[in-house]
Image 1 (cartoon, rainbow, N blue to C red):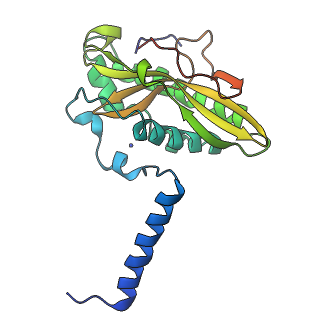
Image 2: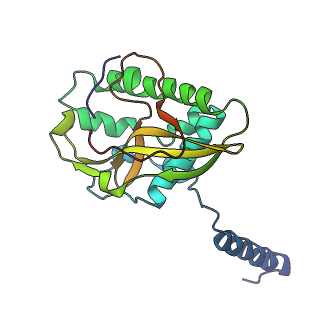
Length: 222
């Protein structure tokens, strides 16, 4: 991340409830309905206070979990929900310690501020009119790169994934939009830049919206 200007005995009813829950879960699996992680595991403990690791996050379930939560936040213009998949503040302060004069101020007034502006811009671009439906998430595993300690003004290494795409349908037409950058902390993907970084103007900006599914990437950046 380079600076840009500006988570006993059992009764028959109880037994029946267990059977019904198990059956429902089996139906979900058989239909291929995606399971999206709820916010509670992310909110249970501040991950930024735990030791950093070099674990590479999943390019399947890990990417989809972030994408589905972010999508719901965009469509509903829900900033608190979007915050659940944003890079942890405490982790950012640790990554920038000794590099930036005021990491907390940079996080609050630039990184998070741009994220919230971008969320509103994505909502305005995607949500009006027919209700959009997420139909796919595109990310290229070959684009995921380890950013070593000391690179890009960071004192802790991390995985970086550029250009994840949210593919959605409105009526009979398909569109897509990019999420500029995901980075990792302890084997979990988080959004760090929703819109482009850097950008020409300090306003909410949608990254690479286009008709059709588009292509993930390009590789590079940090």
